[in-house]
Length: 407
Image (tube, rainbow, N blue to C red; front, side, top):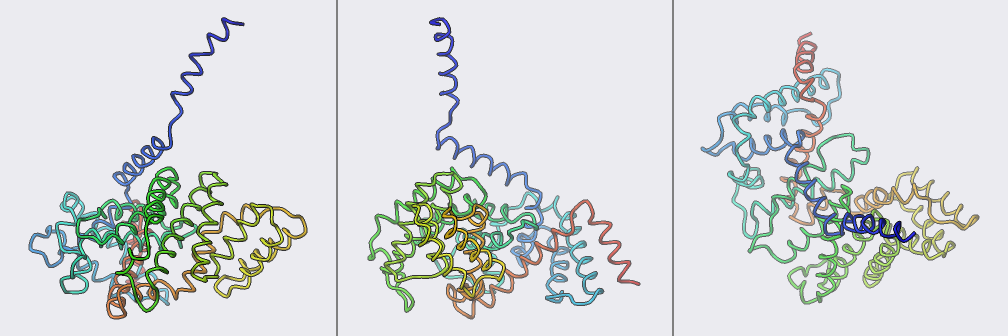
């Protein structure tokens, strides 16, 4: 027996040595993501489109940009919503030819960096942009845009969204001239993006750093944010709540239920200080009450959530049924409903805010929002068009589309 115990010691030591810490797991996730971005085929068309737009009036542009610009102009001239068969076929053929042009250009453009050229916003708005705006802030803004778009694509029917988010984030390196609010936002966005892509250990690092920073702030740190819509104290409570909620979401992915419940309660307390009650608070309290074994209050919150005009009918029916089941059987919120929480809340809160275009208006003003919304819409439409024109089928699709148009 003693001999057996001595033999077990090396095995125990080996198993302990192989057990990775959270920090090691986070680094492994970051390394995996970096390799994913380096080898992503879906990023190639996106990068080439951006270089094509940013370099179009620059004398240093690669020769292939001029040919590419002609194809990009054709996509911008397409009708917003093709209605006839001919228009649908014409759109398919146009994107097929755009993809061919991109792949023809890849050899002369693949070694060029897009940040050699003016910022995308400067090219699209035809004017230099005031400080502290810089290329890195533009990358941060684009990563936020793609994060919203990718979150709305619940079925992940269109490839590339996650790669777009992290490609832009990797370039959004904080600069000395950035306001501290932009640094905080970058950290929160990185944490949310890591979480959405299921890199939960990397997300935990980013979000804990953000939450720690927010916990040490006071209202005086937000005097630059004062506006007609929010006081510095209200901004502070809102940003703290955001950190707690996103970290709670991430800790659910790590299966750390107690930690996620504590964060939810802290986030809800911050929103209570603001007098906020909406879909987010109703869902949050429903979840907290259920995890604490308070099923009647939890069901009551689900009933309130089911009355929201910002949710679709199917979701409202699902919530009402879950509330009734909780009252009759006294069990927790169904796991499938918990899994859809992010989509439910994003759908409701984005609708309540008036959509992406309205959010842009609040951030940059109506005049700039109109100018920015159109290119962003075009970029998203181009992504969808290119996703349907894969490299393996581009030649055949383009040929078929053009033949049908001729007929």
